[in-house]
Image 1 (cartoon, helix red, strand yellow):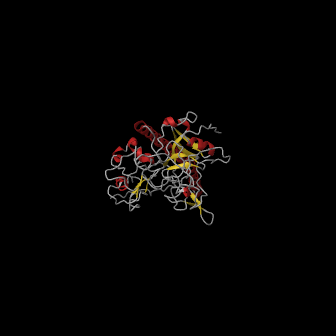
Image 2 (image 1 turned 120 degrees about the horizontal axis):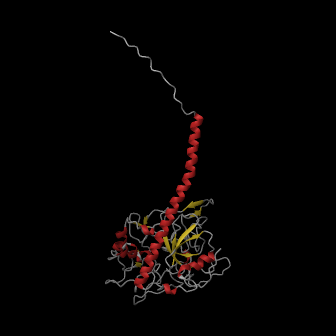
Image 3 (image 1 turned 60 degrees about the horizontal axis):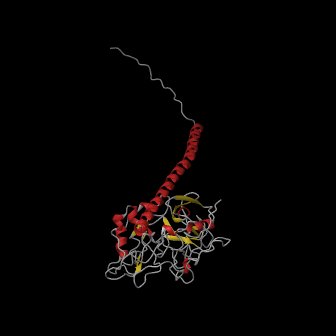
Length: 385
């Protein structure tokens, strides 16, 4: 028998990172992440801003298609009556009509939903959801849990679904799309520091809701039934110099008792806290069911529309339950007439113009300039820095 002796296995020391080298590598990785993260965020925001602009272009096409079909642009909000709806067999139901967004739904690929809706007098708000044939009850039930993407800016931090404020109970369980966009009803008289801008089409102390602020009807998409056509936009103004729809897609904040800014909840300090259908009574309808234009005594609440009074992205420093300011009314915190245009985009808001184009308006936009853009026929010359 032979014994074979094998040499013992030799061990070799392998090189390893020292603690200092490891810390250097970690620091380099952290620096790279720090450099890349802002770039990634900028790319994401650019994509979100582009998607928002595309949404507004789609809304612009829808408004123009509605105009071609009906012969006028949609109302920002109105009671139901001629020529928007016909009296139901049992008579008009107690309530209020809906808003512009509902009327253009067939033109943003939502015809299947729109065709299920009814307009019996209470399509946006019902005095009693149990009254037979209630449109609000029917309409909310059809849209519960449905998010309509065209009405949502990707940068909007507020929930896509919100409780309905159409008085369909339980409202917290009956959630509908919350719009990121508002129609521009016009602008407030003498809103600029020099008082250059003049406008007579403003609600005043004769309105039962004048503590909610001042609502105008000098814009393209205005409350009540003004039968506005694109031809009504004066040549001095021009469709390319008049805003129809813009953004209200971010939180505002108010000062608490200690002076700190507190972010509002999802339905306060906004014109869109009432959900998809929340509308406006306008100037009601006459005995023959005909609708009429705006008046100084009409409801001043802003419901999926706003009247220009403050600068773009004025998000902080508001006072809660402040009457007549138009942002946080004393009676409740929503439906202020003058909630500013706001967005989560950096430096401004997107806005849809009358010709269907979309423009980015910066925070620095002069208030007089913004008022002229908000009005269809003021005839003023727009001068921008």
